[in-house]
Length: 563
Ligand SMILES: C[S@@+](CC[C@H](N)C(=O)[O-])C[C@H]1O[C@@H](n2cnc3c(N)ncnc32)[C@H](O)[C@@H]1O
Image (cartoon, rainbow, N blue to C red):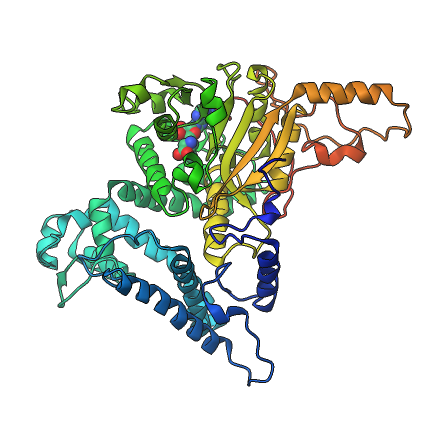
């Protein structure tokens, strides 16, 4: 297992560094069960103190005290560094600086605990009643972004609503009502009635092109798809087909094409998606450095570099990970594979540095066909496998097999779900929501360590699962398997030599996915069905559970659908 560990021993972003801390966290989770709780490894000192003699402090007071304590830690740090206090004033910094670990933990505590205090202050009924209206915040932001309103408001001088209206096709009433909803979230301000000003948050909408794409994609593609998940689930409760997700119900493409094909037909929408991914990648906890930079817990490729090996970024978009890796590792070569349209739209040259650019090849390749780069050292999938339900994901891995040399590494860089409540509440919220994003867009899912292990086992028994590692501070995990068909052969030889002690049990139920059309027949059935006793080793013989603990029903996969 080497440097890999079982996921259960990792608590990062929120990461705990030792078993004793993990136990403490477990106790903490228990004592705060059903409540928002503190970020793991909380900076707030009295978080786990229990004074049995003192009169019981209410949860609200406890939270308020902890929030005060955490806020003081953050505030004192800002003062000590001569930094302005966090603010949404128009000229305020848009991002937090890199914070020392304890201050970052305190900041996370504030984020988590204020949410819980807020809910307690609302009370259960009111909090549920108005919680559902968050969709209207999305609507307001999506519309203001769509009409480019932030660019029409000058940064240095507020503008009367009437003047602003002349610059847009939105009529005055609609402009005002959408703006005023956004203002309730700190986006834009109205310093005097009828006059609109920027805040730091609306400035982000104005100046950050990747954020505009992020809001556009989420507000117009995801939001619309999410609103159609219920009809999709009613029609196809198993929710595994790429062409029967909320997205297809929203955009009238049911049984016709998956989301990426729809995007591929519309360059502006495809570009927006690409830019949105850049925004996500720039967000806290998702930075490429968590994979590229060994000092940040990234993956060490020195050995591959030393032997001038090859790294294939499958579904690598415009190749930004390879560019960063090539800057760090000076000898190895890189192939970025994506659908031809995505490859065509990549920047050329891919890097200003010729030493970097000459070692990166961009290649149109569909990962639902056999891998064409034979004998590479690493095949890397970042934000790819979570886009697919199990039958498709297994198929992507299977397509690698003819290309693999013994010792080849397969690295998946995705979220890896833990049991509910084991993340700090903010990470939990982001990751659980991402799981549902996958449902809405692609009928796909985030996975647990066991589910990743089962994927590899279902694809081919030559994949030896190495485990999951999560760099501290990062939400994404590094999930690795190595191709060792020789190991399987040796084990098979050994087994053949051993006297047969136990009579083999009956052939298990096998989940087979077969296209109706013979030409496009696609099976993810294990070639040799495993005995029932070995069912766990085969995702087909035991339907793989998704992160919500629900086993998806068998699904038909049509080859053309998976393109
Ligand atoms: C969520 S993005 C991830 C991109 C990149 N790996 C990253 O980390 O940002 C999924 C990528 O898969 C690509 N893709 C979708 N279907 C594909 C296919 N059949 N073959 C190859 N690439 C595909 C998309 O074009 C897109 O760039």
